[in-house]
Length: 283
Image (tube, rainbow, N blue to C red):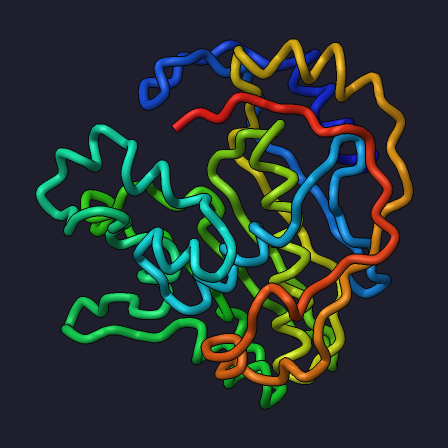
């Protein structure tokens, strides 16, 4: 919580106003932020200075693992995060590649599980990583990436957190996640949960111990209509003790995540929090 709040305060104190063409709003912006999550000791980074929800964030990662490209599929596993991007984004609605209601196009896991090869065909990046890590292999390139500039025009949104690089030291697994852009009041809490969860679940299904997860954010910003709530409400609250994430130990493989796993397989213990804050969301 301290590093999260320090980042929020840094943006307030040092940020520069930048016009955002996509949303038509101004953002108070800084470049380069680093956060670290202690997965090995179970310090789940769920924000406590406002009521926060973790299951939607986990559901989205499961959707990326499954290679979903449709908002309806994301809704079925427990998240509505893709509804607006699929159905309310004017540029995407006018895009000839859009296949209809709820279609997201080539996004995130749809790219990562079927990454196009220049000479034809595709590569399942996640399958390769899971197989390597399960066999104690780290080739220094265990990277699950969603970033394919040649496909941006065929999706409703470029990936924000676009790369997850796994590293194995002995039997301990580490993760470096890189994010090009982050809506700090709304999105960062969501993304913190996702980075933590991705390392925890990948360690579990590959038979390794989780270590630390390192989260790099390039462009961290607060939208102009979020600033008052951040400065006058959230930053005035004292953080509370972080909760614990409990993952069903029966989840033992990538196939489990692809087939039967639901949000009922994840719980938190000891979550204390301040009241909710209704930050505006920008599509």
